[in-house]
Image (tube, rainbow, N blue to C red; front, side, top):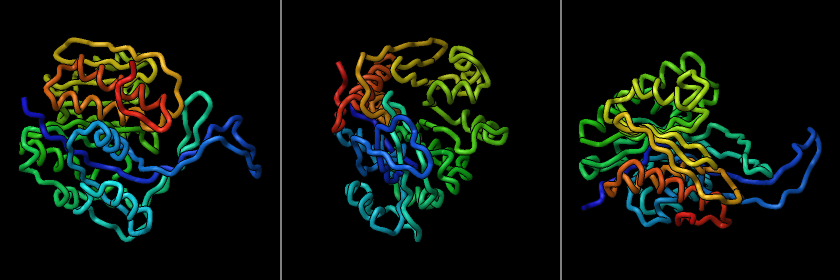
Length: 303
C-alpha cells in the first residue's frame, strides 16, 4: 500500500533550552545549569524533525523572520523551505527552562509566527500532490493571521480530499470564553484531533478525560479519531465509539520539550501507512518515549 502524503502547517521557531533549574532562582540572582542548547522548535518544527529522522516524507508550510535565526531555520529545513515567506521582523524564539522532574517552563516572544497567512501557506504547498493525504495544523494560538482564516484553510484542504489533523496546543491567554467558542468551531472539520489531558478537559469543561472524550467526541465528525496524549501514562484514543488505551514504556525523562509533537509524528506516520488507531497510538507513544529519554534525541521506538 502506498504511503499517503503528509503536510505540516504552522509554527517553526527557535528553542533555547536550559536546565535543569531547581529551585527557581530569586529575582536578581544567577544560577548554573547542567545543559543548554539552541535548536529548531515550535510544534510543527518538532514534528518535522521527528519525521525527518524517521525517514518519512512530508511537505512543510511555515515562515521565518529576516534575521540569522530565520536563515538557520531555512537551512535546517533546506529540502522544504524554498517557498517559505521571509517576514520583515525578528524570528520567534522560546526560552525553555527544564526542571528536574522533566517538566518545563517557556518564555516566548511573538516574532514572525503571527504573520503566517493563508496565502503564504497556499504558496508553500503543492496541493494536488497532497490529495488523499493528511495535513497537521498546529500552533493554533500563535499563528494569529492564519488562525483567523482557519475555516477557509480547512475548507480548501477538504476540497482536495485532505484529512485535517489538529493539535491546538495551550492558549497563551488561557481558556477564555472566546477561545473556547473559537476552538470548538474548528472540531467539525477534524479527521484527527490531537490534544493532551489538560487541554481536552479544559476544552470540554470536565474533570476527567473519560467525560471529555464523550463531550468533545460529539462535536467531531462521526468517523473522526480523537487522541489524548497522557505523558508518562501513554495515550488514549476514541474512534467509532470504541475507546483505546496504550501504556508507555517506563523511561527516565531527560527532556520532555516537544514530546507531544514527536508523538504526532509517530501517530501520523502510522496513519499514513494505513494503520488502525491502536497501532498509531502505540507508534506515537513509543517514539515520544524514546525522544524524551535520550540526549541527543533518538526517534526509534522505546522498548
